[in-house]
Image (cartoon, one colour):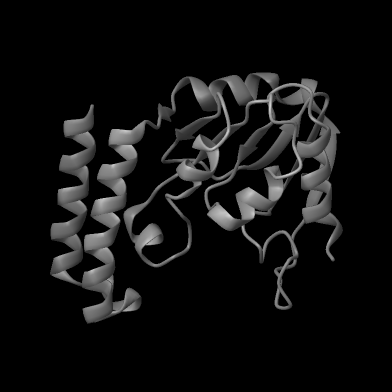
Amino acid sequence: MNALGERVIDLCKEATSEPVIAAPFIKAATLSRLIAGGKPEVSIVCCTHWISEEIACGITDVEVWDVLKSRPNCKLYLRSNLHAKYYCADTRCLVGSANGTAAALGWRPDSNLESRTSLDSSVFIEFESGMLETAILVDDSLYEAVREFARQLRCLIRKIGCKSLKKSALWFYMHLQGLKLLTALG
């Protein structure tokens, strides 16, 4: 078992105040595993991005919302330009290249080679507040809208394939529909 995934689990398990998990790609099963041993009374903050094509191709999951909703007072934020991979609780932060996926955290036989370092959380106070300050807070209506849009996009992908998607006029149409959806939601 990879030390990176286990270190993030320990970080979440030992947290006495709100742990923050931030990564562009987060899979629901991986998030469940990360937070499973955490204290139920400790809320969790998660920040990710939901790019429609990435959701539809299975790179990231909107169902992380369901995982977080199963615990009290958890929050999920979306930030379209998020690239950081950041796991922080209390006074410790793990930062590096690992997204919130099984492959990145070393839980698959064909896992990625990832880098990470551990730093004191005081170094990231400004980063964390800036990240969340301009992010969109997810609620049920946003989740349902994005989930439905991704479902429609998956149907399209089954017909033309992920690699053909971005080259397609249909992708342009679906992308515009997604922008309209986000604009309508506010």
